[in-house]
Image (cartoon, rainbow, N blue to C red):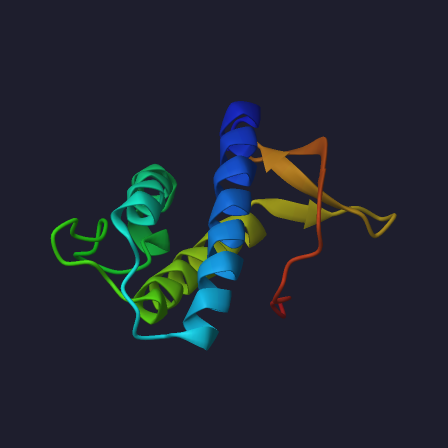
Length: 127
């Protein structure tokens, strides 16, 4: 990934996390309530941006691109989909970071170590 891609990635991932938390709260209260078109418009915009990053093995769901405007999904449906996207974002991030001797985590930029710090992977994989 390039520095520009990392910046876009972090922005989109953060926005997806925010939506996931907000819609997740709605889903706990009323899981079968449909989302309104206003919220759905922004969710779909982020899904389109996400799909540009999550390609190949990182694609969350084969055949899914975004929600249909004329068939409003429930809060529960949106939460399930956003969680799949978050898992794939984390897999992509985990595959593009490394840990320094100081134990700090950094991004790989164009496959090479960088000074761009990141957080510990959510799931550490045994090598």
